[in-house]
Length: 65
Figure 1 (cartoon, rainbow, N blue to C red):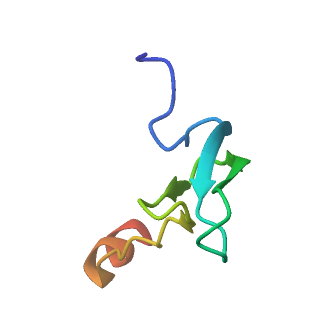
Figure 2: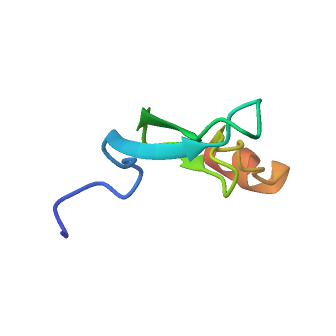
C-alpha cells in the first residue's frame, strides 16, 4: 500500500439499486448502476458526486513560491 499515491479514487463498481415505482401498487424496480470513484449511493438510491473540497487561500499561496 505504500507504493500507491493517496489521491487515487476507488474503482468503478456495479451496485444493485431497488427503487419504488411511481405506482405504489406495482412492485419496485431493480437497477444495476455503475458507481465511479467520486460518487456515492444515497439511502434513497440516488447517485451523488463528491463535492470539491475547499482549500484555504493560505495553503495555495504557500505552494506558489
